[in-house]
Length: 255
Image (tube, rainbow, N blue to C red; front, side, top):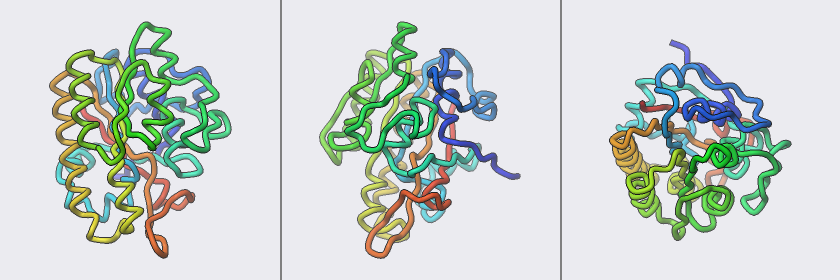
């Protein structure tokens, strides 16, 4: 059965529809009916982003990620990341529903130039929370505009998991977003096709399992997608092009 292909600009309006709030004002994406048909509306939701785990890297190591692979094989769509296929640009698109030319993000030191999901939530008296690391896009770009969340030291995906689940239990934000950085780090270091990445993708799979199970118990709708993919360069893994290896990412969801 063919898998539907959509755009990263469709993420923000889909999240907004799940939560029952308006999409960001300048969003030009469309809510994804395939996802909405599988999720209850007007509820809290979480977006989990394993960095760089696009269709290409996942296809190489899907047997080493049994939890995530089972979710993808049960139901998923494919998204095309916006150009350039780098992390700050695509995280900004996830929370705005617009291309780079509108949100204005080139690096994580920039500031988003249009309305975000966090602005929408604040206007509705709701709370969005971001969980990221120092020196990474979630910690530097998204966390400062969220109403709640945590920023932890670099290379601490496990601390992210602990902080997120603690807050989901204790303060129950209406929207949660996080970035798991390990996959991007090791794909850059070793190249995506190198078997040395296997222990790290296994660890990421275990983190996703813990997050999904914990959030589901708290009655969150959960979406999982990557910000971009990655391919083997001459000396290390790389991304940023419009090639399918860099731009196509799986998106799955749990009610």
